[in-house]
Amino acid sequence: MKEFFMKTYFSRRQVLSYSAAAIASTGFNAQAQSPTKIIFGFTAVTDFASIFVGCEEGFFKKRGLDVEPKFIPLNPSIPAAIQSDSLHIGGPTASVYLQAIDGGLDHVVVAGGGMTDKSLTGVGLVARAGSGIRTAQDCIGKKIGVPGFGAYLHVTFRAWLKINKVDPAKVNFVETSFPQHADLIRGGSIDAVVTGDPFMGRILSSGAGYVASYYTTFLPDGMPTILYTARRDWATKNAASVKAFQEGVIEAANFIKKPANNTKVREHIGKYIKLPPEILNTMQISPPGPVIVEKQLTYWVDMMNDQKMLKASPTVANLLFK
Image (cartoon, rainbow, N blue to C red; front, side, top):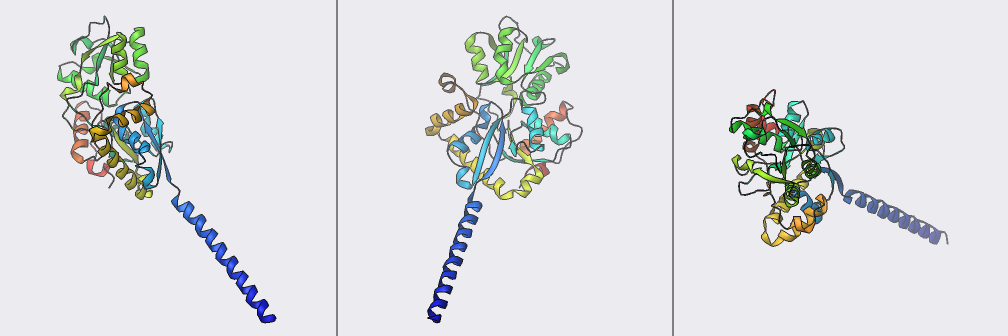
């Protein structure tokens, strides 16, 4: 009887022990397999297509990432949001990023969004109907809206003015977010905007403005318009997640490049930047450039040095997270 009791006692203890271990193991695996949260900051342009596609097609999720796109109205505010940890990764333009580095922030480039392409006509100087603006010279003394001081469109437009012998200091620039462009042109409070689709298309279709110049055609092809960046300390601490993010962006870029996926890509873009079907079907999408190399960043450093926008030239190789 005593022998039976002892066998039963130890048998029950073993069952309880195994059960506890199983529960602990299950809990640990569930915790280990829970996706890593990444809050990503974007502005309302198609250059972020690889993020939208990566989220909607599950390219991030299957790599254990929960990427949450967060709309940011003005591009120059993205580095500050990354620095404060409101964003883990964000998409500043190359010029905004380089100014943030110049200002002392230690951020690194982990991937890239859209790239320049001379065949695209989705970006330009859109003038108010009746303003008479047709050339760079016509911009002198005029009030021109740009979606962020120091951002891509502002810096490239300044470069275009200089190429055409116009001092950018003679133009009155006003910082205005993309969604405001149509109303500001229609209301007459500004003379022109440097803008892009889908907002450019809305202005043109309403008759409130016209394209004075597709000025970005002076840019070489293959230069990044948007960089995906993070704080260096965060990227180093979360290196495995950054690598998974990079892989997801590359897979999304390959998806975008396939013509058969065109309809899906446009639907995914429309979901995040709230576009109606009639605009979605006609807009141009920047080619994706998921991998950034030194030559591409050096191009922007040189342009910004020419405009005296940097106090010192950064060591470009140190800016790329590897």
